[in-house]
Image (cartoon, rainbow, N blue to C red; front, top):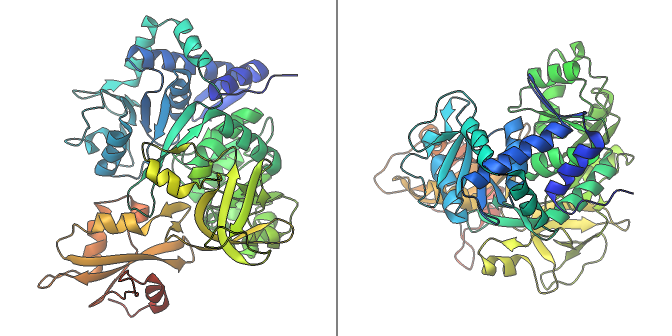
Amino acid sequence: MTETAQTLPQMIRQASRRHGQRAAIVDGALTLSYAELAGQSERVARGLIALGVRAGDRVALWAPNQAEWILAACGTHMAGAVLVPINTRMKGSEAADVLERSRARVLLCIGQFLGLDYPALLDGLRPATLQHLVVLGAARPPRDGESSWQALLQGAEAVPAEAVHAREAALNAASTADLMFTSGTTGRPKGVMAGHGPTLRAFSEWARVVGLGEGDRYLIINPFFHTFGYKAGWVAAFLQGATVYPQQVFDADAVLARIQSDRISFLPGPPTLFLAMLAHPRLREFDLSSLRSAVTGAASVPPILITRMREELGIRNVTTAYGLTECGGCATVCDPADSAEIIATTCGKALPGTEVRCADEHGASVPSGQPGEVLLRGYHVMQGYFEDDAATREAIDAQGWLHTGDVGVMDERGYLRITDRLKDMFITGGFNCYPAEIERLMAPHPAIAQVAVIGVADERMGEVGCAWIVRRSGTALDEAGCIAWCRGQMANYKVPRFVRFVDALPVNASNKVDKKLLRQAWPASPP
């Protein structure tokens, strides 16, 4: 019997031995076998060591879904370093904040993507602790202070393979694998530290429940910088011996064509993805017969969507899951055999080895069917927030329970249903949006005296932001101008879709903005 991998590099080595010449990644014209995945990841690790990366150093990665993202991540782990994924929708100042606070020594960064020059976004903002910026792709040559991916690989020649093997041998299940920055109610992203072993254990279980298996062709549209695309994505695929097909941008035409041409069998994503596919005017012209399994979540799911995914897209196994970055991305999951009603209205049962309960404000469990804050405890709860003990103690109590800030109801069978959020976070097309962070980014506008952001229902995106603004005296600002300004200051999914202007924001007895009243006021009259 094969020994269970304890670290991500061990998992890659085992997959190479088990699956050798099977395709691990198919990215356009590039196909990498599992053997080549291990060999090229090791070469990246040697290149990073040649740049001076030490065990435990942070290596940041700012790029869309592509083969190099996976090689860079696996190479980072093989070098004994900690991966810091950065959201490709972040603006330069947001990315610079993550780089500075993580003290990343190396940034592996896409050159040009969707009309933007990503390294140039950091001009004037690059932290002193960032020693190397390596540009992925051949869209443009590196500028002063940058180097190329090819140069990184060439630098590997100076480092023997044994140096990588020694770094890998020094890792264990409890070693920190990644530092993923997630926003919070404080309005500033916090770095979530996760270990190698818990990731492997959780997503082995996840893959087993959702039916991801050897030989599956997995189209990954969920971004690699997110746990859904990274851990429930290519990590789960490599654990099972599946083939990864990275997709950089969601486009219904392109996705339907890829399902047909590449015979895709496994496709997770937020409800927005499947709704767009179902709404495609030429849906019936595509051969989707290979599509066997899908996992959705990250937003409310109408029961009719599950039924339509099964009947109109022909997906036999459809399931949903619940999790957050602080627990590695997954805590509960439905079984594909569950009814459409159960899959749409619940998040399923706890993963094996995970405890889930709903509690009152004193931490005492509430009876089945009664709402309470969702608390999680288990092997895959985060190691803590990076260099933030106070926030860690606030999130994880003395008994080891992670306080999620979500309100849920547990039925007598152990199925969890999320009903509300203690925190103000809302989800736009699968992306978590935190009002406190958006408010912080909007506050510098010269015409804004006060701003409060809430999530409001949207048929396509699940929820979108609405900003309620008190203007500064003597200034002028309209909805279109405000939204246009926001687009230059923050990732596009954070930009409020609606703006309402008021003379004063409602407050409660503690003089805090009463967002319940703002939600009740929606939809207000147009601005």
